[in-house]
Image (cartoon, rainbow, N blue to C red; front, side):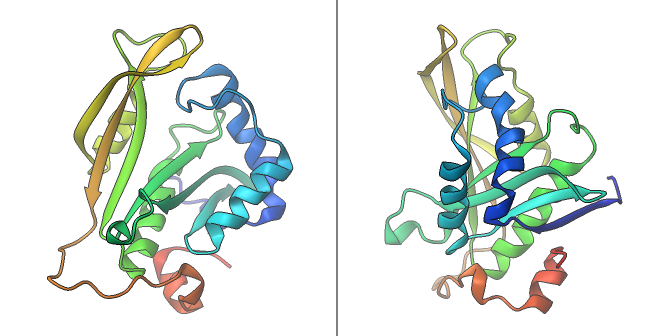
Amino acid sequence: MNSSITIRFAEVSDAPKLVSIYKPYVLETAITFEYEVPSVSEFAARIENIKQKFPYICAEIGGEIVGYAYVHSFVGRKAYEHSAETSIYVDINHRKQGIGKKLYETLENILSEMNIYNLCACIGVPSGEDDEHLDRNSENFHSHLGYRFVGEFQKCGYKFGRWYNMIWMEKLLREHPETPPEIINVNDLSAETLRKCGITF
């Protein structure tokens, strides 16, 4: 893993750079099923909304943001509160440098402190052979990091004039107690705890 990678919390002011990282995934791939690149203001609002409860983090190399990751509520009902859905995007010019792994490791450390036990990843995959817009790299990446396949929806996403499947993968962060403690808001974790999780201030 690249030792020069640092992880910090994303700020609303990072929205222009994060949009630039996300843009090619929208326009050139089916990794996201979103059709249009969100505006900077819309993206900023998304960051602000996530940060009210959950970690939204970015990776930097030499002061340049090269990737980001976050989680949000899984389904949204009270009974699901100890689970979260993950999202991660790495700058297409900085892939295969250990950035994604470090983002996820830091995210998992923080989520464990928040009393989150299950991580869920919704991943687009080809409905047949790999094509120029989508392969199984994301599925393989998650599998390498300990996620397991739990289900597949057939031809549920349509983009670039073709159908794509969607799979769910899951990772259990630790043992589930009989009675779980309440979720801790990320903003209530101490700076010392967050530094131990891998966050740079």
